[in-house]
Amino acid sequence: MRRSEREIKDNTILEKILKHANICRIAFSVRDTPYIVPLNYGYYNGKLYIHSAKAGKKIDLIKANPYVCFEIEYGYQVITAEKACGWTAQYASIIGYGEFKIVTAFADKLIALKYLMAQFDAKQSFTFNEKSINEVLILELTIKEMSGKMSGDIQFPDAI
Image (cartoon, rainbow, N blue to C red; front, top):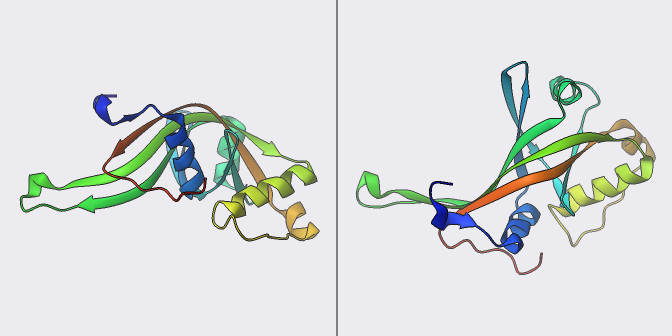
């Protein structure tokens, strides 16, 4: 990392970013063709959980190559200045690598959906009907490696 003073070395901060952000960008690569897609996710214990339709380009790419790169950011804000070159941004971000697998067991899909909804509202309890759980495809991204970078005074909610 070129700006080593911005590197996040505290795993607690990386966990806060993962738990409080709600959009990740997944970069796929098959046959030297990159493809990136923004997705909502739920995070728990080193894994990102994503809901999806059972078919489509994303699923085809995962089946061809389950190894991906992802990006997550939190607290992004433009910081203005009088001179153009003085403008900057405040942010906390993660770049990571991981491997996708498709979750097939009904009970595991239900748990993953709860993680996904908790990413947006951890205080509310959600219920899911059996038909919806059976129809949705759940993807589990196991994080293999990640690094973080932060600039500015990022404030995280107290609860993790």
